[in-house]
Image (cartoon, rainbow, N blue to C red; front, side, top):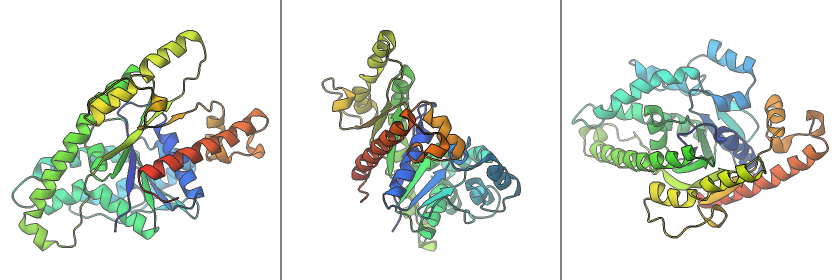
Length: 338
């Protein structure tokens, strides 16, 4: 049995994707789930939230084979094979597969193998490389007896993200209230459908190959990429003009999501708060975010010793309620029992 993989994806940056994943990972673990987080963004922002700079530098400078996600798959770029990744224990139920800025060099390797995986022979290595992220994450999840894998990726439609999405069971799309997020939906939906279809053809090609018999224990991801829903950000400035601009874009998201992501008829206009695909509207926690980043904690775990006093303390409690509710909504969507 494999561990379900949930990926947070938007090809527009600056929508709070990494912070959202980080807080949900903590909340799922607080609610009893064993959670592996995987940083597959070459910018390694998730790793930077979990770990201090000295720890990251030591991983990158002195880490051996498998110290990061890149070190685990790097041998495939030559004549070697995947090595086990060094999963870091954040808590007894929360774990991290560290990211690596060097992962960007793996982009070309993945791009080269994509057409080769539709050949008539010698398919094992291309399929091994294209599914390498899935192989690494599943081995790590099995070792930690994880219930769920949460994956952070960069804001693009490149070969790295294609291989991550191939490995993905569920996709959540964090969105901003702007033109760029709407345009992102136009790009994301067709890309996911194209990748799902192309990977299905590769799975069929593999099943009908002689090598499938030669390697009976070789497992591959299904490439489901099921779109669970989207999250929006609350506007932060309560002045007339900014609110009107916010409403202009945010109210177009439900129909755009149906049209471009679900390939459905948009139907009548519907507001995000009435849309079952809108998982939540994420608040701006303002000064709590840098406070939490400084001590490498989620905002709902900040204490008075961290500076969360007065109105900040009330915001911490509010954040805990908000993320607990969101975790419940997402868990229900992906059939994760909390």
